[in-house]
Length: 98
Image 1 (cartoon, rainbow, N blue to C red):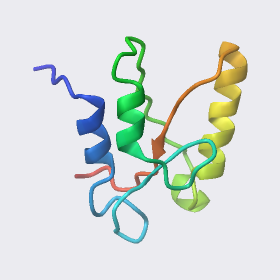
Image 2: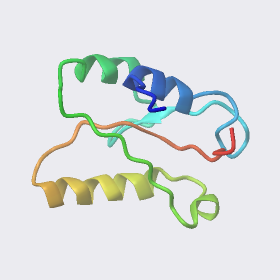
Image 3: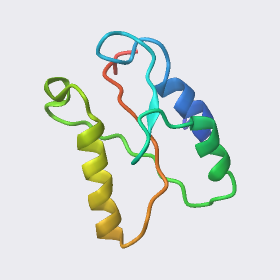
């Protein structure tokens, strides 16, 4: 069965308790903000038909610890490759067993 999740539901799931390396809640961040407002992001994209969700599994993610620099570099490269600015948020998520 194919589940259809809204972006708001998906972000709540990613930010739940227990997903950080120290077992705390995850927090959305963006290219410029370490604490991005996920609700604001959802509102900005409400009418946008073109939304994509990516799961990025860094092979050495646990060893990297803070994934923000890795993710931001990846998104900068995606913007260059696509030749467009992207409005995005990410949540570092280390617990994928739940």
